[in-house]
Length: 325
Image (cartoon, rainbow, N blue to C red; front, side):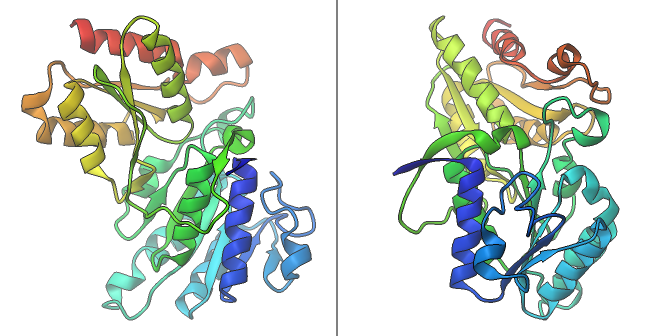
Protein backbone atom coordinates (compact mmCIF):
# COMPACT_ATOMS: atom_id res chain seq x y z
CA UNK A 1 0.00 0.00 0.00
CA UNK A 2 1.08 3.53 -0.69
CA UNK A 3 1.25 6.05 2.16
CA UNK A 4 -0.46 9.25 0.99
CA UNK A 5 -2.25 12.25 2.46
CA UNK A 6 -6.01 12.63 2.62
CA UNK A 7 -5.67 15.44 0.06
CA UNK A 8 -4.01 12.99 -2.36
CA UNK A 9 -6.56 10.27 -1.59
CA UNK A 10 -9.46 12.57 -2.48
CA UNK A 11 -7.67 13.66 -5.64
CA UNK A 12 -7.12 10.04 -6.67
CA UNK A 13 -10.76 9.19 -6.07
CA UNK A 14 -12.04 11.98 -8.31
CA UNK A 15 -9.52 11.29 -11.08
CA UNK A 16 -10.27 7.57 -11.11
CA UNK A 17 -14.02 8.13 -11.27
CA UNK A 18 -13.68 10.76 -14.02
CA UNK A 19 -11.59 8.33 -16.06
CA UNK A 20 -14.11 5.56 -15.47
CA UNK A 21 -17.27 7.55 -16.18
CA UNK A 22 -17.47 10.44 -18.69
CA UNK A 23 -20.63 11.76 -17.01
CA UNK A 24 -18.60 12.78 -13.92
CA UNK A 25 -17.44 16.38 -13.86
CA UNK A 26 -16.18 18.87 -11.26
CA UNK A 27 -17.23 22.45 -10.62
CA UNK A 28 -16.46 25.03 -7.97
CA UNK A 29 -14.46 28.09 -7.03
CA UNK A 30 -10.77 27.88 -8.03
CA UNK A 31 -10.96 24.12 -8.69
CA UNK A 32 -9.34 24.43 -12.14
CA UNK A 33 -6.43 26.68 -12.98
CA UNK A 34 -5.68 27.49 -9.32
CA UNK A 35 -5.64 23.73 -8.58
CA UNK A 36 -8.16 24.06 -5.76
CA UNK A 37 -8.07 26.34 -2.69
CA UNK A 38 -6.66 23.39 -0.69
CA UNK A 39 -4.97 21.77 -3.72
CA UNK A 40 -7.35 18.80 -3.59
CA UNK A 41 -8.06 19.21 -7.34
CA UNK A 42 -4.41 19.51 -8.34
CA UNK A 43 -3.69 18.35 -11.88
CA UNK A 44 -7.31 17.75 -12.79
CA UNK A 45 -7.81 20.53 -15.32
CA UNK A 46 -4.61 19.48 -17.08
CA UNK A 47 -5.93 15.93 -17.48
CA UNK A 48 -9.62 16.52 -18.11
CA UNK A 49 -9.79 20.03 -19.56
CA UNK A 50 -11.98 23.03 -18.88
CA UNK A 51 -15.19 21.31 -20.02
CA UNK A 52 -15.08 18.77 -17.16
CA UNK A 53 -13.25 20.88 -14.55
CA UNK A 54 -15.26 24.08 -14.34
CA UNK A 55 -14.11 27.19 -12.52
CA UNK A 56 -17.16 29.07 -11.27
CA UNK A 57 -17.92 32.55 -9.94
CA UNK A 58 -18.16 33.06 -6.19
CA UNK A 59 -21.81 32.02 -6.12
CA UNK A 60 -22.62 28.96 -4.02
CA UNK A 61 -26.31 28.90 -4.89
CA UNK A 62 -25.40 28.88 -8.59
CA UNK A 63 -22.82 26.12 -8.08
CA UNK A 64 -25.38 23.96 -6.29
CA UNK A 65 -28.11 24.81 -8.80
CA UNK A 66 -25.97 23.83 -11.79
CA UNK A 67 -24.98 20.60 -10.04
CA UNK A 68 -28.59 19.71 -9.19
CA UNK A 69 -29.80 20.45 -12.71
CA UNK A 70 -26.97 18.48 -14.30
CA UNK A 71 -27.68 15.52 -12.01
CA UNK A 72 -31.37 15.59 -12.95
CA UNK A 73 -30.48 15.09 -16.64
CA UNK A 74 -28.04 12.23 -16.09
CA UNK A 75 -24.66 13.78 -15.25
CA UNK A 76 -22.73 13.03 -12.07
CA UNK A 77 -21.42 16.38 -10.84
CA UNK A 78 -18.96 16.91 -7.99
CA UNK A 79 -19.65 20.38 -6.61
CA UNK A 80 -16.91 21.72 -4.36
CA UNK A 81 -17.74 24.17 -1.60
CA UNK A 82 -14.62 26.16 -0.74
CA UNK A 83 -15.89 25.65 2.81
CA UNK A 84 -19.19 24.25 4.03
CA UNK A 85 -19.71 27.49 5.90
CA UNK A 86 -20.61 28.91 2.49
CA UNK A 87 -23.06 26.10 1.74
CA UNK A 88 -25.64 28.04 3.76
CA UNK A 89 -26.08 30.19 0.65
CA UNK A 90 -27.06 27.06 -1.30
CA UNK A 91 -29.45 25.46 1.20
CA UNK A 92 -32.55 25.98 -0.95
CA UNK A 93 -31.01 24.02 -3.83
CA UNK A 94 -29.74 21.29 -1.49
CA UNK A 95 -32.76 20.89 0.79
CA UNK A 96 -35.71 21.74 -1.45
CA UNK A 97 -34.44 20.32 -4.74
CA UNK A 98 -31.57 17.82 -4.47
CA UNK A 99 -33.03 16.04 -1.46
CA UNK A 100 -36.67 16.03 -2.57
CA UNK A 101 -37.04 15.28 -6.27
CA UNK A 102 -36.48 11.53 -6.19
CA UNK A 103 -39.30 11.22 -3.65
CA UNK A 104 -41.56 13.79 -5.32
CA UNK A 105 -41.16 12.16 -8.74
CA UNK A 106 -41.81 8.64 -7.49
CA UNK A 107 -38.24 7.66 -8.32
CA UNK A 108 -38.32 8.95 -11.90
CA UNK A 109 -35.83 11.77 -11.26
CA UNK A 110 -32.63 11.05 -9.42
CA UNK A 111 -29.94 13.42 -8.22
CA UNK A 112 -26.56 11.64 -8.35
CA UNK A 113 -24.43 14.54 -7.22
CA UNK A 114 -21.71 14.99 -4.61
CA UNK A 115 -21.20 18.23 -2.73
CA UNK A 116 -17.80 18.10 -1.05
CA UNK A 117 -15.35 20.37 0.74
CA UNK A 118 -13.91 21.24 4.16
CA UNK A 119 -16.13 21.44 7.22
CA UNK A 120 -15.61 22.04 10.92
CA UNK A 121 -12.78 23.88 12.60
CA UNK A 122 -9.59 24.68 10.72
CA UNK A 123 -6.74 26.65 12.28
CA UNK A 124 -7.48 30.16 13.49
CA UNK A 125 -10.03 31.07 10.84
CA UNK A 126 -12.52 32.21 13.48
CA UNK A 127 -16.29 32.20 13.78
CA UNK A 128 -17.50 32.28 10.17
CA UNK A 129 -15.14 29.59 8.85
CA UNK A 130 -15.06 27.02 11.67
CA UNK A 131 -18.58 25.65 11.96
CA UNK A 132 -19.64 22.00 12.00
CA UNK A 133 -22.93 21.73 10.14
CA UNK A 134 -23.35 17.98 9.82
CA UNK A 135 -26.39 17.94 12.13
CA UNK A 136 -28.14 20.35 9.72
CA UNK A 137 -27.69 18.10 6.69
CA UNK A 138 -28.29 14.83 8.55
CA UNK A 139 -31.71 16.19 9.52
CA UNK A 140 -32.88 16.14 5.87
CA UNK A 141 -34.43 12.95 4.42
CA UNK A 142 -33.06 12.29 0.95
CA UNK A 143 -29.49 13.35 1.68
CA UNK A 144 -26.54 11.05 2.37
CA UNK A 145 -23.90 12.52 4.71
CA UNK A 146 -20.33 11.14 4.81
CA UNK A 147 -17.42 12.38 6.95
CA UNK A 148 -14.10 10.52 6.55
CA UNK A 149 -11.39 10.51 9.21
CA UNK A 150 -8.52 8.79 7.34
CA UNK A 151 -7.07 8.81 3.80
CA UNK A 152 -8.22 5.24 3.09
CA UNK A 153 -11.78 6.09 4.12
CA UNK A 154 -11.73 9.37 2.20
CA UNK A 155 -10.89 7.68 -1.08
CA UNK A 156 -13.20 4.69 -0.70
CA UNK A 157 -16.16 6.73 0.51
CA UNK A 158 -15.77 9.42 -2.16
CA UNK A 159 -15.68 6.86 -4.96
CA UNK A 160 -18.84 5.26 -3.56
CA UNK A 161 -20.45 8.69 -3.21
CA UNK A 162 -19.76 9.60 -6.85
CA UNK A 163 -21.39 6.34 -7.99
CA UNK A 164 -24.43 6.74 -5.72
CA UNK A 165 -27.76 7.82 -7.22
CA UNK A 166 -28.59 10.06 -4.26
CA UNK A 167 -27.21 13.49 -3.37
CA UNK A 168 -24.22 13.03 -1.05
CA UNK A 169 -22.93 15.70 1.32
CA UNK A 170 -19.25 14.82 1.66
CA UNK A 171 -17.66 16.79 4.49
CA UNK A 172 -13.90 16.78 4.93
CA UNK A 173 -11.91 18.42 7.72
CA UNK A 174 -9.33 20.92 6.55
CA UNK A 175 -6.89 19.96 9.30
CA UNK A 176 -6.94 16.36 8.08
CA UNK A 177 -5.89 17.15 4.50
CA UNK A 178 -2.23 16.53 5.42
CA UNK A 179 -2.98 13.40 7.47
CA UNK A 180 -1.07 10.44 6.03
CA UNK A 181 -2.16 6.83 5.91
CA UNK A 182 -1.99 3.63 3.90
CA UNK A 183 -4.26 3.45 0.85
CA UNK A 184 -4.59 0.32 -1.33
CA UNK A 185 -3.16 0.54 -4.83
CA UNK A 186 -5.96 -1.58 -6.26
CA UNK A 187 -9.51 -0.44 -7.02
CA UNK A 188 -11.82 -0.31 -4.00
CA UNK A 189 -14.85 1.47 -2.59
CA UNK A 190 -16.28 1.69 0.93
CA UNK A 191 -20.08 1.29 1.04
CA UNK A 192 -21.97 4.30 2.31
CA UNK A 193 -23.60 3.41 5.61
CA UNK A 194 -20.83 1.09 6.82
CA UNK A 195 -19.00 2.09 10.01
CA UNK A 196 -15.61 0.97 11.24
CA UNK A 197 -13.85 0.14 14.51
CA UNK A 198 -10.65 2.19 14.49
CA UNK A 199 -9.30 0.71 17.73
CA UNK A 200 -10.40 -2.37 19.64
CA UNK A 201 -11.13 -2.12 23.36
CA UNK A 202 -13.18 -3.67 26.14
CA UNK A 203 -13.78 -0.98 28.76
CA UNK A 204 -15.57 1.91 27.03
CA UNK A 205 -16.84 2.82 23.55
CA UNK A 206 -15.81 6.16 22.05
CA UNK A 207 -18.03 7.11 19.10
CA UNK A 208 -16.54 9.86 16.95
CA UNK A 209 -16.34 11.00 13.33
CA UNK A 210 -14.11 13.17 11.12
CA UNK A 211 -11.36 14.97 13.06
CA UNK A 212 -12.84 13.87 16.39
CA UNK A 213 -11.76 10.30 15.57
CA UNK A 214 -8.14 11.42 15.77
CA UNK A 215 -8.82 13.11 19.13
CA UNK A 216 -10.51 9.94 20.38
CA UNK A 217 -7.56 7.82 19.27
CA UNK A 218 -5.18 10.13 21.12
CA UNK A 219 -7.30 9.82 24.24
CA UNK A 220 -7.46 6.04 23.87
CA UNK A 221 -3.67 5.87 23.68
CA UNK A 222 -3.34 7.89 26.89
CA UNK A 223 -6.01 5.80 28.62
CA UNK A 224 -4.17 2.62 27.69
CA UNK A 225 -1.26 3.87 29.79
CA UNK A 226 -3.61 3.73 32.77
CA UNK A 227 -4.87 0.26 31.90
CA UNK A 228 -8.14 1.38 30.29
CA UNK A 229 -8.86 -0.11 26.86
CA UNK A 230 -11.12 2.22 24.88
CA UNK A 231 -12.77 1.09 21.66
CA UNK A 232 -13.00 3.82 19.02
CA UNK A 233 -15.93 3.52 16.61
CA UNK A 234 -16.17 5.69 13.49
CA UNK A 235 -19.58 5.62 11.74
CA UNK A 236 -17.95 7.23 8.67
CA UNK A 237 -21.42 7.89 7.23
CA UNK A 238 -23.85 9.76 9.48
CA UNK A 239 -26.82 9.22 7.20
CA UNK A 240 -27.41 6.36 6.72
CA UNK A 241 -25.96 5.46 10.13
CA UNK A 242 -24.43 2.06 10.84
CA UNK A 243 -26.16 1.45 14.15
CA UNK A 244 -24.95 -2.15 14.42
CA UNK A 245 -21.26 -1.32 14.70
CA UNK A 246 -22.07 1.13 17.53
CA UNK A 247 -24.52 -1.15 19.34
CA UNK A 248 -22.19 -4.17 19.12
CA UNK A 249 -19.39 -2.16 20.68
CA UNK A 250 -21.55 -0.75 23.49
CA UNK A 251 -22.91 -4.22 24.30
CA UNK A 252 -19.30 -5.35 24.68
CA UNK A 253 -17.96 -2.43 26.74
CA UNK A 254 -21.19 -1.42 28.58
CA UNK A 255 -20.19 2.25 28.47
CA UNK A 256 -20.40 4.96 25.82
CA UNK A 257 -18.88 8.39 25.23
CA UNK A 258 -19.80 10.36 22.10
CA UNK A 259 -17.27 12.90 20.81
CA UNK A 260 -18.15 15.58 18.24
CA UNK A 261 -16.74 18.87 17.03
CA UNK A 262 -20.17 20.48 16.72
CA UNK A 263 -22.07 22.37 19.40
CA UNK A 264 -23.88 20.42 22.10
CA UNK A 265 -27.31 21.96 21.45
CA UNK A 266 -29.12 19.63 19.01
CA UNK A 267 -25.83 18.11 17.88
CA UNK A 268 -25.71 14.77 16.07
CA UNK A 269 -24.16 13.17 19.14
CA UNK A 270 -27.54 13.53 20.83
CA UNK A 271 -29.07 11.36 18.09
CA UNK A 272 -26.46 8.66 18.67
CA UNK A 273 -26.92 8.85 22.44
CA UNK A 274 -30.69 8.50 22.01
CA UNK A 275 -30.36 5.43 19.79
CA UNK A 276 -27.83 3.79 22.10
CA UNK A 277 -29.91 4.30 25.24
CA UNK A 278 -33.03 2.92 23.53
CA UNK A 279 -31.37 -0.15 22.02
CA UNK A 280 -28.67 -0.88 24.62
CA UNK A 281 -30.34 0.33 27.81
CA UNK A 282 -29.94 -2.97 29.67
CA UNK A 283 -26.29 -3.21 28.59
CA UNK A 284 -25.25 0.20 29.90
CA UNK A 285 -23.50 0.38 33.27
CA UNK A 286 -23.43 4.20 33.26
CA UNK A 287 -25.22 7.08 31.52
CA UNK A 288 -23.93 8.10 28.09
CA UNK A 289 -21.65 11.16 28.17
CA UNK A 290 -21.21 13.61 25.29
CA UNK A 291 -18.06 15.63 24.62
CA UNK A 292 -18.64 18.63 22.33
CA UNK A 293 -17.30 22.03 21.43
CA UNK A 294 -18.18 24.99 23.62
CA UNK A 295 -21.59 26.57 23.00
CA UNK A 296 -20.17 29.83 21.59
CA UNK A 297 -18.94 31.03 18.18
CA UNK A 298 -15.38 29.96 17.43
CA UNK A 299 -12.86 32.54 18.76
CA UNK A 300 -9.79 33.58 16.78
CA UNK A 301 -7.22 33.27 19.58
CA UNK A 302 -5.28 29.98 19.42
CA UNK A 303 -5.61 29.41 23.17
CA UNK A 304 -9.34 30.08 23.06
CA UNK A 305 -9.68 27.88 19.97
CA UNK A 306 -8.10 24.98 21.87
CA UNK A 307 -10.44 25.66 24.79
CA UNK A 308 -13.41 25.68 22.40
CA UNK A 309 -12.66 22.32 20.76
CA UNK A 310 -12.99 18.89 22.41
CA UNK A 311 -9.52 17.76 23.48
CA UNK A 312 -8.17 14.35 24.59
CA UNK A 313 -8.16 15.61 28.19
CA UNK A 314 -11.93 16.20 28.08
CA UNK A 315 -12.49 12.80 26.51
CA UNK A 316 -10.49 11.16 29.28
CA UNK A 317 -12.53 13.04 31.89
CA UNK A 318 -15.72 11.77 30.25
CA UNK A 319 -14.37 8.20 30.26
CA UNK A 320 -13.59 8.50 33.95
CA UNK A 321 -17.16 9.60 34.54
CA UNK A 322 -18.64 6.50 32.95
CA UNK A 323 -16.04 4.17 34.47
CA UNK A 324 -16.20 5.36 38.06
CA UNK A 325 -19.68 6.85 38.36
